[in-house]
Image (cartoon, rainbow, N blue to C red; front, top):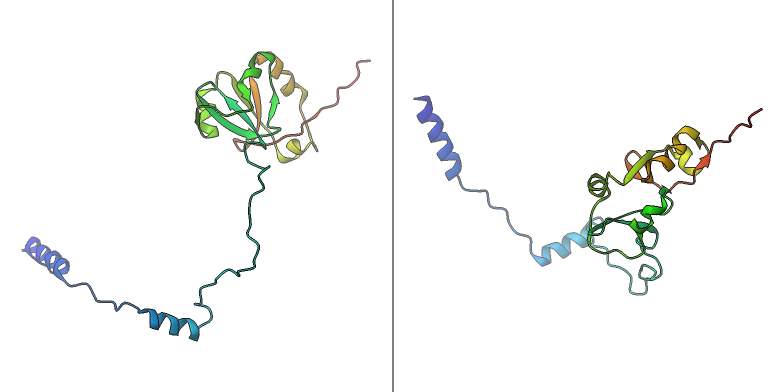
Length: 166
């Protein structure tokens, strides 16, 4: 009995006609726009200067391109904080292959890329990175990218002053 009632209710609701909504005509729209200034569509002025991107600027020219031969990604200039001589060929000026997101590129190339989590103060050079952290870079033979919350960031790293040995 309950099943039959539910089935009848579902069929009745699906068979119900949709309410008709009258369509607005062009005359009614123009009348509404004249009556209410908030509805008016804003048209750009004819003499208004168009905003354009300078030809000399692009995101690629302001970035460092990392490549593994088939895929490439970009990081901000200054994000590469350590580059071993043997891996200099992984940094290129011209992109070639497939562009991939930073996280995907890092995952696929974790064998030769390492990251160094830095704070904003460390990236700006206000606070120095610990010496023990930077001394490991030359031993691991990996490209080190400065990151903040796992995203690449430009860094002007200030080295911690070394204390003179007495």
